[in-house]
Length: 621
Image (tube, rainbow, N blue to C red):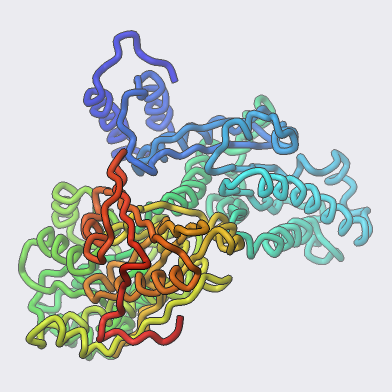
């Protein structure tokens, strides 16, 4: 990027960058994105301190002019705290870029590759005018040829890169020369493209590196008649109109945020005029709107949407100014409630400042404020939350309850690239955690509490079914994480296939309140006489139960059985993993090196061991 002649200081550059981005946040118009992009180009960003893991390299390959999308992705990445570098491949040279090992694409070495291909670029010029004369066999051959071309290109990318690959599906034409008879044809024009999209979907359904961006669905939502600015299309091969570009960019940003673990996992809700219509303290139990009339049904549908989020692993919590007994009675007893008490991991129902409640709620759930979404009908409460806790995403809830679902569905921050069974049960697990806290408060000592939990631990080596969850934990766990090294699922699978060099463990915990699922991960790099613990981490849900000791004991036991003399551990400090700082020292390791922000520890396996705590039962392993 161009540097100003008189380079400003780091703090001045940061201040200017923030001011530019705030302008876009306030008014996210096409003109403001364009102005922000040009202003950022003129800043000297070389001296900025970039936090670890916040760089993102994006490559754009396409069959049409795609430079305007680069502008949106650059600014959009910065809006979520990322520092992007973007490579735009030569016009309509995507095949050459992928097939040539010396291309600019491979020299760039991107984290994300966006392959944007217009279906018409893969078809002969006589395809549309002659389509209705083609036999079914010829139409099927055309589909197979297109899929084969895409398959070859994507296979090459998978072989040559570790990048996340985003390939769009194809736009189904809204016009057919056959008119109303298109659906009567043996394979109509629309059906041809619909089948093409189904073939693409099925081909990459199991891939953890290739994802299909649903361009067809985006275009349907936006309106296909507004999809293309035809003057710009014919003059400069711009496929996406000015109005459609933001929707495409936002969809791609959903994948980028998921890749970089920029996600929200907790929805914090007000009650009055959010989960039901009316004010319980004034209208009373019988007169609030929930079910029955159209307004009441809208509130029920909003609860159904929230329940669908809960069932896919989003935590629900309450932060509401109400009399506790009145509000809880609705949750427990109202016949038209869709959500019930066990759906809420935490309930802050009182008359305190909601900002204070939010901070307490975050601490109790052990999740960062940057992981939360706040839903409240009061503009004043929303503004108070924005100003006091800018990390929290505040939803601009419409006044009309008929539009509440639409407002929540517009948020793209709940996406993940991989969803495990443990992720789906997160809400249930947090409710069980609440019950554990209540039990702990009733016991006279920590040891008595731990024994009363009746904990059992299952430690297994990684395999096909556990790797998605293991990858998820590696990329999301921050507090009890000794090294905070991040790996993609492809990298985890590659390590797991090399048993002579690596051993990957997953730890599952069950107690009297239920199954916590896989909550611990360890990756060991094996040498002949030394094992190095590359990664060792535990979910914040189980910190404090000394399960980490049982986990380490398993690794020590395996190392001894393999004839290993020393076990080496590392601690790399971050802003969040201080709770893990003394882990190796607490378990008898000797400090052997401290340099370049890494402390290395060693355990002599001939002279020392690690034992499982008395209150933990090992089921196997």
